[in-house]
Length: 79
Image 1 (cartoon, rainbow, N blue to C red):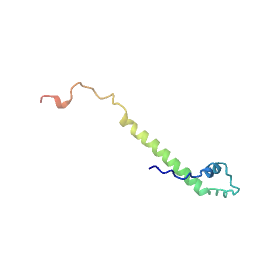
Image 2: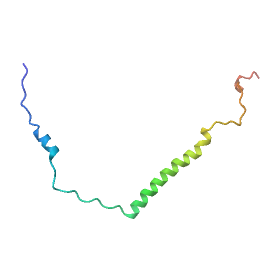
Image 3: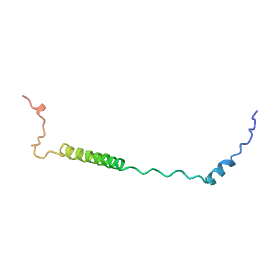
Image 4: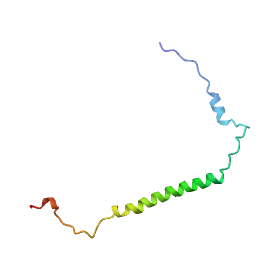
């Protein structure tokens, strides 16, 4: 009814954790001055955009305390 399957040797997985290669990857290329300047410019632009949107959006987020507050809206006036 139930067939037993053949055991699969997983010993190679345990050995793979201990395996160390003697081949080193090539060193990373250094970024050129233009690439570094471009990265800094992009970062500065993103920070300036976020800061500018926060500065421009702050008046819209603040409560207007100078306007007179009434308990009734103009739509509820019987005119």
